[in-house]
Image (tube, rainbow, N blue to C red; front, side, top):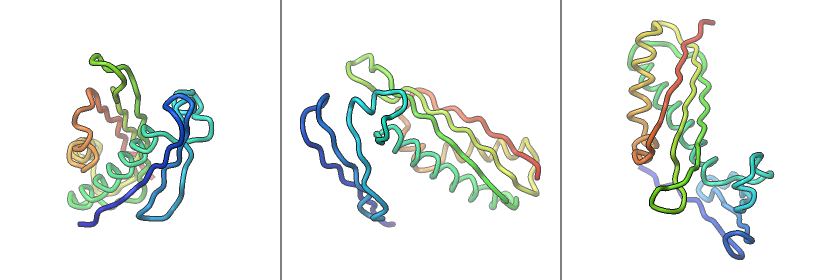
Length: 148
């Protein structure tokens, strides 16, 4: 299996510094980041570790879900997944990811809503990013099978 690489370059201190995170393996882009923007409500036009984790989790979950739906005999027409990652205080000091909320809406044929929920729950538990995030206190899933 391949190894993927990202690189971060940072100038300055924690509160007054800034940096860039580069998606090195794919070469798809370099994105600005800073602590003031990380802690702002709108993100200030920069990314942050929590957003990158949300992107990774929503992508991984979606791929796992489509694989498991196919194994269950369903035909997948469309899947849309969002992940909300919440940063909060760590009782031991500092911060930690306290919650991730996955929301998925899918159109698929050959599966009913009950079986879809079971497959979605399995995807949440078995996607590699979910496994990597096992230390998060609460990872919730809101899964809906929509009809075309």
